[in-house]
Length: 430
Image (cartoon, rainbow, N blue to C red; front, top):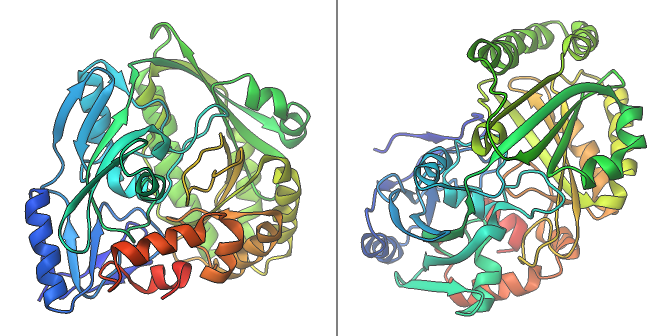
């Protein structure tokens, strides 16, 4: 009997018939052939930071913890095994004088999970993390390893960089990295009016810009990160602990527990939190600025939208929050990315704005998420593959121009649906 699996948020669980820990592509191929022979489906799991059941299986759960090593460094091209966590990748790159050009705000995911779901950071000049892939290898349903790049199997490359685990299991990834760089982080409270009046400049004049809106207020926290030559204003250790550990995790977690028990307390807590924020500016290596600890558990939905639809979607979200029968305890995150050419990327063919909504674990969320999805869908919204959503293949085929191409390639690579589960059947079809 295998141990049950659950994701980080605890909203997805599964019991696999067996668990495999391959240490190479060859061993992985054997695992896949054996599963197919026994009539079992297969899912590879990483660190469980997806909120969807994309990794859930009752068949064979493939843990990639033994496929997590550095393969080679060739200038700014770095090849790693797919099970490497982003935190280890960042340390490995730093040791070689390199860095990821952009990152999201946590580093707990494996590189394969982050890439396969379209994980992104923020920055008008940067696509999702998958745009940094120069080549990858994928072990497919028959146990063979396929390699692809922009020039080798380009159709597979267009599909596999964001593949939601439906085409095979990633084995290695080659990333084009940047020379290690320093960011100056400028974080400060502001009003929504300040954001909207200067939004083109905020997005266009900064390397990386995002903001967090506090529900039941007109207040936001703006974050602007820009490259600078050196670490000349490091954040004191006590201030980092106070802001990123004690206030953002310990105190915020306590406030969420109070709000879950006493919903009427949520709006005043949100107003106090928004007003209590203070500005801070500091410099640090890029990955230390991009990534912060997240210990307060939540569930999340995130939608990518055409950038010109942001204000309408955001105003719709404010109306949703105001009309809910319960209270929202988490700030709303807004980020920006550049267009790309990856078939199932949320940013395929357009510059995106992203709105991410959250709710504390154990608090009601479904009506909130469904109402927000109803706002974003007619605006061209595309759900993040690793975040909760309720869309189906029929709906998603309208949102992604290459949805049918991806399904056709899946039919070719996995005709017997070795890598299928309830999630892939819902978003891609049976």
